[in-house]
Image (cartoon, rainbow, N blue to C red; front, side, top):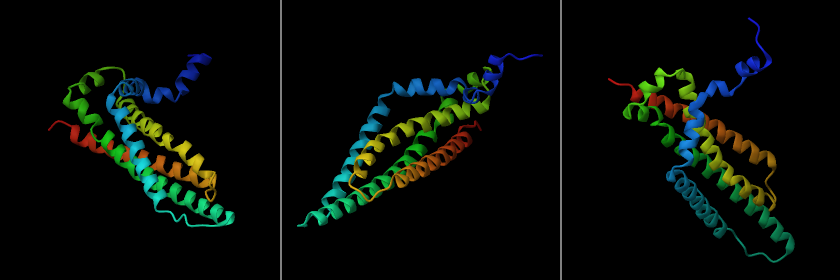
Length: 190
């Protein structure tokens, strides 16, 4: 059997691995008011933490050199706080978003219908996992402009910002997969 170029491209496509569940989950979640509230609360908490750190900084300086030094120190402290907040918050969100992903399908009695379609179980699990992780990446992306502006203060290299983002995303994938595992285990009928 000879495969055409489009057939080869279709077989090697990474989108084939995640299937239509990824697309469906993204479309459904983009319409939920809960996600807009989630992003707003995340930004509000982030703002509160930044204001707390900013208010605790020592601003009693006299010379321009000391002002520059204090701004670099303030930038470092605020970026470190944002990175720590983002790391913890995204792990908690990953657990809460994915811990009921499969068990909700069981409770709504839609998992049996999904299993009767040509979609395999790997595509169901990966579609749910990657769609929720993509939503969390959007939330993590909210902080990138803030971190870029704070980098102007000095004292924070781009490598630190990129490394912290990579560590956070990797841990979100692990935590999300763990939450999905618990959802699989608790979603099975007795």
